[in-house]
Length: 172
Image 1 (cartoon, rainbow, N blue to C red):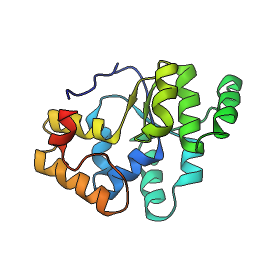
Image 2 (cartoon, helix red, strand yellow):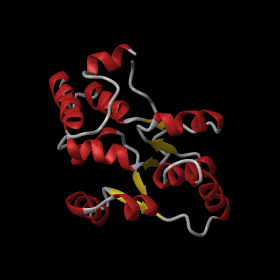
Image 3 (cartoon, rainbow, N blue to C red):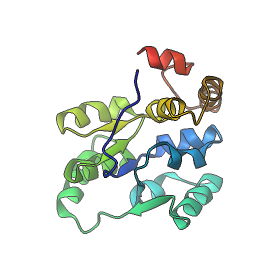
């Protein structure tokens, strides 16, 4: 599977799972190097999901401007779509999908069960953790064994990914 190309002028809106995967793999800092796009975290995702050491890491990333916080509290269209989506999905996915629907930005989430159909119906481009990993591999930021170790670490720490190797993902 070739790396997904995205318009460099679009924002990438991060859902919690992608950040958690990169944190568990020990590569949170790499996340900002894979695509030239600015990374954003919706305020609801930050406040409702992250605790402890990861919360500190995220707040440091925001302070250093690696990731920017996104507040859509003044956008009534996004707020009403968010409220509607929250009845069916988690707060993180709902906030990210609602924002992307009205702002034509890219959603970063590996929760395909929740986001895939909505994104396809609303013409929202999305990236999964494995899309980020594959792009890092294609750009030479990680070797094949680095990618496989990343996947192993994420899975051994309780998260789900649909493959055991980057080679397996690239065949999909």
